[in-house]
Image: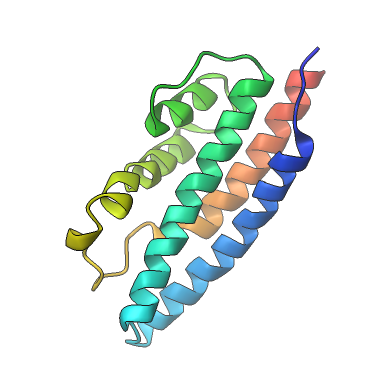
Length: 143
């Protein structure tokens, strides 16, 4: 029998809604020409939290279903996708997202803050698909 930490997974899935809302606000602000330093830093934080949330959920799934150990953030996305948890298209979006981790947390001095990251407009739909896919995956694995 599997131990699935439903509470942690559900909390993180719900948090993705906040990140999706923040992504929409960021996109609106950039469209208005408002991208001062506070909005630039907000964008970085939204991206960083998105990476951590998606990989936390992936790690919880890996632990719950005793999948092979992940060696990187990208590997978390690949392993969970390999088990059929979400679509190829979503996998590609999530890989683009997690590849931003190193620039965000290590190369932040060189991060291009002036532009809206192209993933920001994609995140709300990606998070909605991800949440539905994760829930469906858990349900199918428990049947």
